[in-house]
Length: 231
Image 1 (spheres, rainbow, N blue to C red):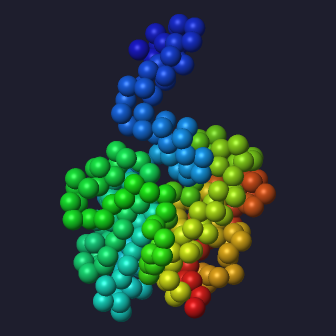
Image 2 (image 1 turned 180 degrees about the horizontal axis):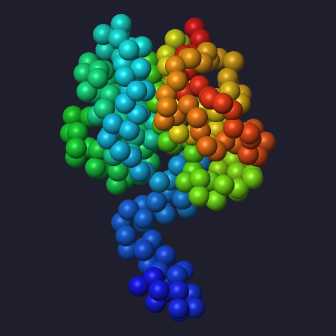
């Protein structure tokens, strides 16, 4: 089919249009891309136990709290929430995602879970840990690797998302940012956070980063993944 489409003028574009309109998953992504101006990563790919070392570290840092409150920001189909529940059964975990299809899958897999179609937690909610994993990025940046990210996902969008997460994180709480195309060290609110020295093989050495001027930056030896909000 691909060979046939390439042989017909406009065939590839027509094929993409048909897939986007008749594949429910692609249709939902297209809806988000055209209707959510502040959208972050539009592609909801995830895996079970994707970041086990990080999940273990979060559990260890929250061990003294009898019922910690955790936010999975960009939870996709809930794999991250379920991984955290296995480690911290007493935790109260909220999963947020704008993609209606993946939230439906999360609710089906975990009927007792708190999964919401939302871009931010409810006003006044506070959490002891927030995970923003593989959401402060964009798949198109990864595939095209432009010198400037502004046309796809500007740094300001990352900064705005961090401000919303910061308002929901309790003092002394933990913020995990991983598999991102930006880093907290460059953000406007970086002075409010202390980086944790823990290193995570999957996450501490990104292959693509952009700075506050939207331009690609030279990759550091490592970046912090866990950050503690100062009291």
